[in-house]
Amino acid sequence: MAVNLKGRSFLTLMDFTSEEIRYLIDFAHDLKSKKRAGINGDILKGKNIVLLFEKTSTRTRCAFEVAVHDEGGHVTFLDSASSQFGKKESVEDSARVLGRFYDGIEYRGYDQFLVEILAKYSGVPVWNGLTDMDHPTQILADMMTMEEHMDKPLNKSKVVFCGDIRNNMAYAWMYGCAKMGIHFVAYGPDSLQLDTKALSAARKTAEETGAEIEITSDTSGLKGADVIYTDVWASMGEEDQIPEKVKLLTPFKVTSELLQKTENPDVLFLHCLPAFHDFETKMAREWKEKDYDIREVTDEVFRSRHSVVFDEAENRMHTIKAVIAATIG
View 1 (tube, rainbow, N blue to C red):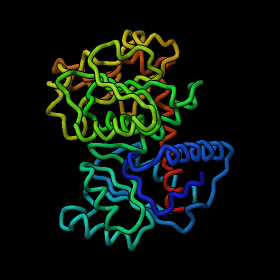
View 2 (cartoon, rainbow, N blue to C red):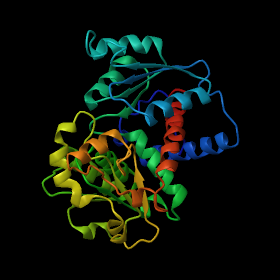
View 3 (cartoon, rainbow, N blue to C red):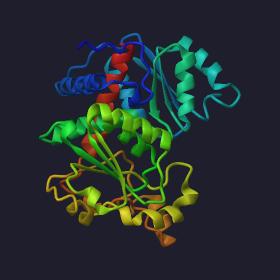
């Protein structure tokens, strides 16, 4: 089936069919092969995109900028200090203005509603670089990485997200797994409940694709996992919750013992990064001095043969390039 995504926004994987997601991953594999061969294209020649960042980032910003430059396009970066977005100018008004200047808009911030407003009023493709409820470009990179390191198709695999199962990455994985027929396990404390509307939508999709959505605090959910995934325990702006989160989530820290419970000697460890895996960051050291270990994964696992986090990080750029090229190229 021919896939045409030109003019589409990329706000959540729930907006796309399995075939369309498959197309984007395949496109990313092809673009990666070309870049490795020293071949850059001109798909975005003459195109201009703007990056709106209310939350800081390393991988997302760099991935978008390099992806656009590789294909001949131009980038403008705006953060909270350099724009009036949502402050002196409404989101709708900003969308209408930016849509007249740019061929595409990336947004990384807080409320999913904001990226939806941008898409509604800008008249150009809008890409979700992260919100509180989703991170779809990350999931494309993660699935691409799985395919590079597994000898089975995605719809025969099992992904376990460990820790704060209300995290945006947990939701993003649930959506991606539902769409691609993957067995998804949210492994975390019983006290953390997923949004019922989001869970219902994912399970409805799973019925169509053969996916399985499982929520558990029991280690039996780890058995047979092909991927163990986690994320930091306190997102940006949630630092005041760290003492509570450490107490709640330490039992779900990714350790060598946890990997062994998968009973899969080739289980992969993935993480969207940045990760607290040692005490070489200012934040980890400061909290350690207060007797709080904020590491969501041990250094032993992070640096082990199971870890493919840096391949995964690189793939952010290739998958983002595929999304941009497919939607505005």
